[in-house]
Amino acid sequence: MLGGDQMAPRNYNDDRDRSVPPEEDYYGRAPIDLDFNSRENKRGEPKIEEEDGINPTLEYDRYYREQDTQKIYNQQQDIRQTRPQQRHDYPDSRNDDLRYSPRSGKKDAESNRRTAGSAKAKAKKKGGKAPKILSAVVAVVLVIVMAGVGMVEAVLGKINYDEKEENAYVSASELQSSRKVTNILLLGVDARSEDKDEASRADTMMLISFDGENNCVKITSFLRDTWVYIPVADKKQRLNAACTYGGYSGVADTIEYNFGIEIDGYVVADFEMFKVMVDSIGGVEVEVTEKEAKEVTNHPGRYGNVKLDAGTYTLTGEQALAYCRIRKIDTDWKRTERQRTVIQAIIKGVLSSGPIGAYKAASNVAPYIETDLTKGEIRSLALRAVPCLTGGFEQTSCPFDGTWEYANHGGASVIDLNVDENKDKLIDFIYSSNSSENE
Image (cartoon, rainbow, N blue to C red; front, side, top):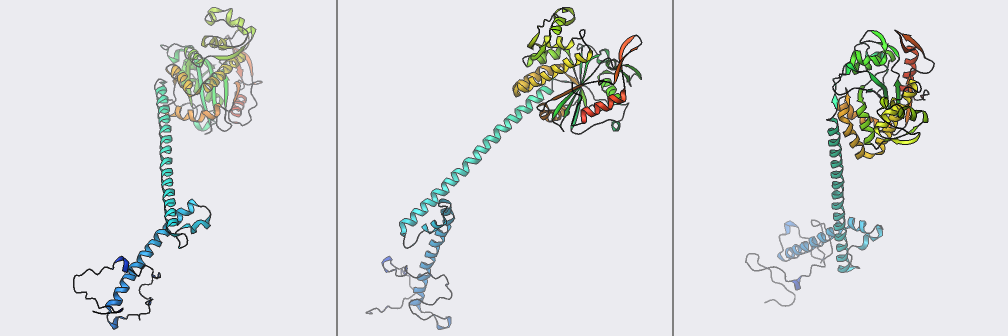
């Protein structure tokens, strides 16, 4: 046996347990030194060079010192990894020192680790909630869009479509046009569903111009007695007779030919559709003069037994139609003005009725509409028209003041006009930013 502090050399060739008991582990307090390959023995033992051979005792000490040092190194790495989260919890950078230190002890280190863990959990919880809310919003928007598309398609499916015919009498290069202006010819006819368009005359001819440049709607009425050249018939005649010779597209061709503006499509509505539209939005508010009220009320056969009172009233579909058809008490210019007044009131009524009200109105009148616009063109027009509809209205009539005179052709009283002057004024009204020909 050996006495004192001497230690017998260990034999590495037997199978005894050489692990160090906890009470004999003297190396946990060893100073940290991560340079394992070059450090000198801290207890004063000489550095072991490979050529000196292996000292079992020193190798034992070195082995466990390295194990303990690696353990402390790993602990410090864990502490460093918590620092970014601690900065999140404590915005003041001075609080970075709240991590484990000899002064704070294990209790503070454990508290900091719990704080970091709690912050991570909160961040994870918060990060998980936002995507759920966003997903819900996206889902709602998609449902609304799909419902809107479905509603639009349902309305479009009820409309009567005509094949679009190109104007064979004037080339597109000769017509004034703009990508920011869409011209739709509105034709009002006193025709039943069994009548062919060639057999009817257009009682109302109104150009609705959606001006995206100035965000407004411009309405131009064409007087039906205007004496113009009708290209499909190769002769001059009243403008409303163009429908008899060439159908609805014949009216569009005639206006393009004489006034030099491009028409993107036509929409045809008969009297029944007009009444349904007005009733669908709850009527239109119109100021009726005493003279107008007497004309309608005193001629039941002419206006369908409709009665009107002087004053400002909300007119039903029947009353609004009778009001638009008044023709015996004044000029055709005043008659077209009444028509534009009602059209403006209808547009405002549709806008104020909201999406559901607008859908109901469109769904009700769709079966009465006939057009040469395609479904795609109607969708595109709807998107471009919205800002224009909310931007105000401008209106005029053609022929313009000072460009016409009454005449007699073949025993009929008609309106002769200076075609070139009216062409220039109409182009200026539709495409100019400063329209001055408003009534």
